Length: 180
Image (tube, rainbow, N blue to C red):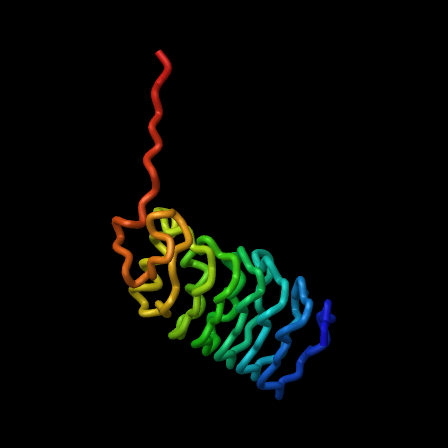
């Protein structure tokens, strides 16, 4: 539909709505409270929208949400509270593939306690010491999906995450010479 905006109350309290597909539009932002009251919503597609940044957006409580697709949205940042209100949800599937993520904080995903699938491929991952915590969390929780791979540094370009070792996720040392 080439939507550029959705009014914050467009779906207000549509309690019987179980699926909402807003994919392939021109949405640059999502207004607070856009999905408030959509308690039975199970599947939400926001993929292929130029959202870029959800650092300050917070999804409301959507208890029955099972799948959220944020793929191919040009996203580079998620805030620690983006998914905070989904802590009682049934969210099992989160698609973040094809965005612009270089690093993510594992704490962003803590509210998603039932997560079993997290697609991350097609992002320009910088596989260094700053990605190590997130990478370990993904691998420990069996959330790795092939072919998630590194874009940087050059020595790891194209290496899939399942082939990485903890010690390969290193940052170059910083040498400081004290002035006499």
